Every structure is written in C-alpha cells, then in structure tokens.
Image (cartoon, rainbow, N blue to C red; front, side, top):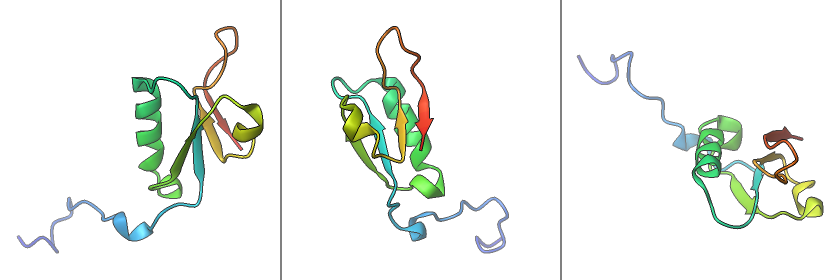
Length: 82
C-alpha cells in the first residue's frame, strides 16, 4: 500500500502557518502543567505555533487571546478564553 492510499497517514499541519493568537501563562518557573497546556493548545489549528507571553500583570494578560494557569492560591486557576 502506498502512503497516498494509507488512511492512517498523519495530516500535515505545518501548512497551516503560524497563528496570530497569543497564549498567556504566569511568569516564574515554567512547570509541567503550563508546558502541557501550551503544547495542547498548539495542537489546535487556531493556536498552531502561537506565541506565549509569561506575566502576572493583569493589564498584559487581559490583552491576550487565551490565558491558562494564572491566579493566586486562593483563586481558581484554569483557562480563560477571551
């Protein structure tokens, strides 16, 4: 069977180009949850190869398309989609 006939051939997403969307996460030590979150988002075509901004400044984070794992210990952490 040739690769052109293989129904299990992986789709090439490199042709999508770089996304204009920006992912935000907290500054400081980069931990496994942020790394996984950024990686997972970049698997979605809308966020493919998107830029990551690391900050705790609310003014900076409010301008971004999506923010993940930012908050104080008393606040709920999670994903904020804008």
